[in-house]
Length: 352
Image (tube, rainbow, N blue to C red; front, side, top):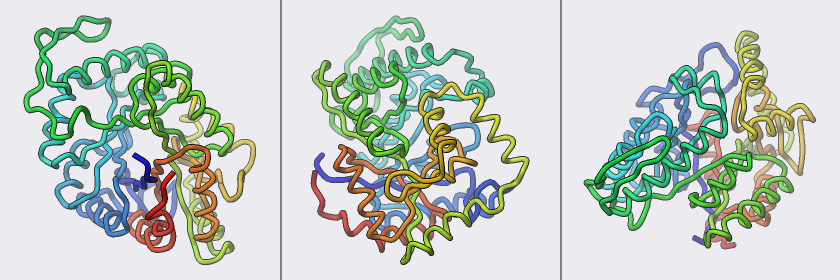
């Protein structure tokens, strides 16, 4: 793939004009999530990330609903390998893939919050979770090839496994994968089609790209690279920054305290890197803001500015090796269309 790819985000824990409220202004109903997906498709986005985790609706069900109410957009379904057997995941993904005629992408999420994982009954430590992910990917990739095989490992055992039905996409479903620890980057190098990072400074993103690229070369592989960011784009710089600060102007104190505990309890290297960025200051690079990271786990940085400024900031990432952008804005229905009108056409024919 040589083009730059843009994806939007499905707000499956609610949406609205403000972050950190006790209850979201817009509940994640099927009707609203379909509205967001259709807006993203009209705006020109190629795909849509459907997140996983305790705060979110089930990603497989939401992803399939999105696929059934759009014509082109590709659901990027996030899921955790610790909660589903690889053979079951292979059948689920193959069925989804065939029903949508090859529109499925998958985001394999190992997980970074011991407390949240414990709520689902998963108590492995950080490195053990990644070792389980490694074995999971071994098995699911064998399933996707259509071969009959047996496997006996530390976490999974199957005998004479075979995938029915076969995939619609040739070879495999594209795997998106993130993580900043050494073990995560090694697994990404071996298995990922797209290695994902959160929106850190361009220099740090480039350093991790070079690290994973070097590791992947030892396996004879050449993955692509993506970044997950928020965007606040307006006609003037003042309007953009006013809109950004408005997002975090009504944070509920109970929600703030809860999120502070989340940040403290994580064993995710990537989350710790984002948390450290937030502590260092509100802005970095040309127009990147850390304000969202004060109240939201995971992706906590946003590009804020005019269409020209957003274009320039995205181009800096492209120059560093990024070809996949997973973006979001609040509220997601309106902001998808705004970005589609003001910024996305500037990248319609770009190649790298």
